[in-house]
Each structure stands twice: as C-alpha cells, then as structure tokens.
Amino acid sequence: MRRKSLGGTAAAAALAALGVAAAPAAVAAPAVPRHLAGHTSTFTVPAGRRSVTDTAGGASVTVVPSSQTSPKATVNCTLTVNNPYLSGGYVEGQAVVNCTGVVAQIQIAVGLYYNGNLMNSGTETVPSTMSTGWYVQYPVQSGQWQTGALADISWTTGGTGAIPENYSSAVTFS
Picture (tube, one colour):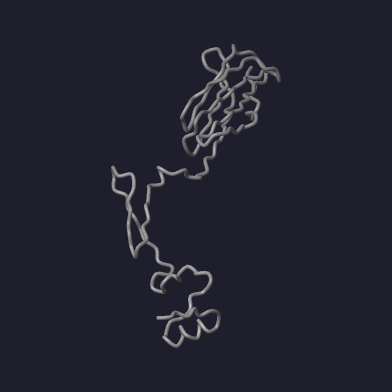
C-alpha cells in the first residue's frame, strides 16, 4: 500500500472530511469550565499537621498555615516618653516602646535633662519582644527637668528601623 503525504490545505480538507479538526500550531491552555470559574475553596489545616493537599479534576493544591509562610504583616512600634517624676530624693525619667507584633530586638536609650543639660542616660536591649521600657535617675535639684528617649528596632524579617529622639514636657521641681 502506498501512502501519500498530505500537506497544507489539502491535509486540512482531508481531516475536515473525516470530521477531525486540524490542531493549531500552538495549543492554548484549556478554558476554566464555567461552573468552576470564580470558585473558591476553604481549607482547614488540622492542629498538628503542617499541610493539607487536595486533588480535584487532575489538579492538586497544597495549603500550609500562614504561620509557616512569610507573612508581610505590618508591625508598628511607638515610643512613649514620660514626664520626669520624683521618687525618694531622685528625679526619674522613663520611656517605653510598644510594638503591635514581636520584633527581633528593641534597644531603647533614655536621657534625663536638667535645665537643658544631659545629666544621666542609659540603654536597655531586649530580644524577641513586643515591648520594653527603661528609666534613669539623678539626685533632685531645683529647676526644669525633661526626659528624652530614642529607640532602634530590629525586625524579624531582617533590617532595622529607628525612632528618633522624642522629649517629654519640661517639668519644674523646686
């Protein structure tokens, strides 16, 4: 038996006569069936399991809880600088950093100012925390006192941020 190779439009006509459509040069991805378009599924990963895999229509998906992924959650940190106060013959200045989530590290520096001059300062560094505070003190003298503080934050995703120095109101002790 002799075979004849059909090419071009003759091949397409022969295939059409047999009820077979010619394949396009590039095959497009199949369209999503109308009943599945816009379909969403909810997955629950049971406690103690790291993932759940579901298969439907020849496709599978694996879901992991967000705690095992790298969330891009925003963490905000606030520095609160308190007015100086008297405590047992000393003036104390205190500041606190509060964050909306755990950060890798908070370093806070607090200074106590008397009539505009730095009288005492100190720093505190706390790893893996949402908040920390620190205070400094100096023997009381008559005049204006003010607390100043700044903080450096190390993020759990890497990198650092700085909260510039903020000051309390000036308080007069006599």
